[in-house]
Length: 353
Image (cartoon, rainbow, N blue to C red; front, side, top):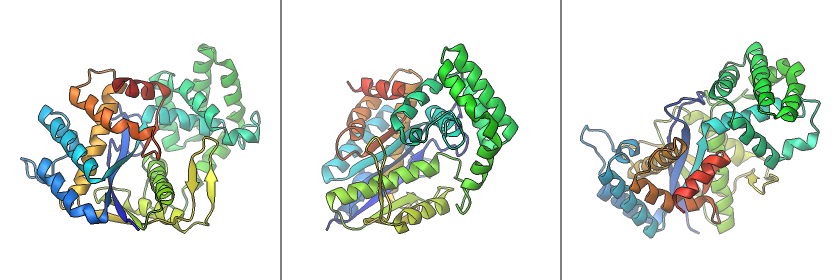
């Protein structure tokens, strides 16, 4: 059986700060590399990028993508890795949309909102629709919620709910505003549940994007591994991550869970009791060309999404990179996940149309 290591790294990491105006996107991305091809893949990376930049540090994707010659090197690298059989995988999350989605999960939970039926819990499509509505609220409204959620202060969360509902009513979303107000009497219970929901999780990632994005990433790896009938899979991550212990805990939780597959209403599989993905290894990016390639992949997707989200002029190299990578989110098996507003997703694909 074929065995692979998925070398991965991140871009746009701001931890629990969901609304850093300088970093509006978070990406976790990696390369599937077959064991028998690792040496060749490493030589491809070093040939195109080199291991060391002028200042004595490894070449970072965020710096490389800014220069035309860097973009050309990235494109050549990606194409040659693809020709070798290496496959890119990524999760791209738009932080503003994630704040809107968290508002839905916080104030439209049937357990704490008597105006909702229990069936709403599994209604993924409606939740996405509502998150798109909340996404359009003013920046200060979303920021107020993000800060209140980060501190989990009941008074702050209550005031945030009132602000959100007033803003929705002003935009004629009175039905949604009225329904969300159904949770105001349970704010204390919501805060208590959030405060205890991370019990047992090591590290400080429970209320960050890093943890759910990593969980999505490894679940997709496991699903693909099962579909294709692969042997043992390994995830290798840059040692610079501050959430190493959390990631290890997440993998062990999914790997060692009862062998039950959960399907979401949108068809997405949450596999428990991993059969193919068994290990998480931490590597030094300075010594691992393939971790460096993952950093370049994450940085390229990050730069593309940031430029698109701010309606900035796209450099030709970024358009070519998008044309190469974005189809991974729509072909089967899907190697790309976009957790983003319909607006950003539409604009991303319009760049490669």
